Image (cartoon, rainbow, N blue to C red; front, top):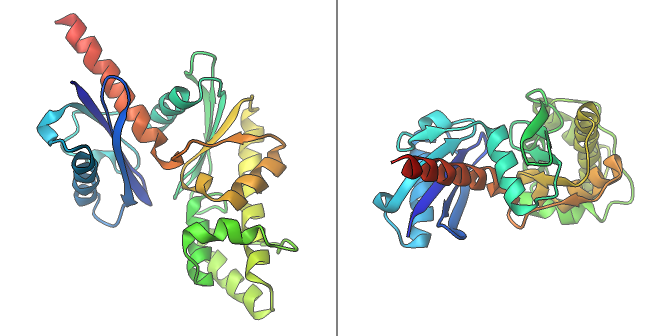
Length: 264
């Protein structure tokens, strides 16, 4: 049995995924922390432990993401755009547009009928269009990140936000709380701010259906529903939306390995 692995070291979360010739064997997601090199080792080891494998059992490892250069044990690297496209193509072959809401930025990728990247656009850093915005708000409201999506669905109104930067969002949320605004209404406003930014990116790239959403933001049901309303399209979400780039990386590693073996 041959195994390949993909490791995606993101600004906020890191992911590892192991494939055999037929299916996903294991994967792991964890916060990236401050030391990407240590995180790379840990996230890989967790996936290996779940699969009951050793690092020597992995024939090829490909790294991607913000901290890909820190994965010293990976034999190769590829861009996030390429890996996201390859991963989502494996899950949803009909998808032509991918919205990836990561911790540092949001990317919108346009694919052709063969799953190859035709175009892409990336939000500016520190904008109200990334998962970082959600993390800041969750901390200020004293709520677990995974709870803000369902809680936001209770909103009776949408609180408007003027800031376009996650750094200044904290003070604005505190001001809204002082004004007596409800948490769920504040969250609805945060989702609206992010969804508006996402919609503007989607408009720039002239998206085509089907459309999928990935990244940590895809795990927030409130954000997904708000984005669907802004874009006016149903979004497809993978079962584990944070590992699509790692899946793509593992698939690319497997393809390169087959090419190498075929040329021998």
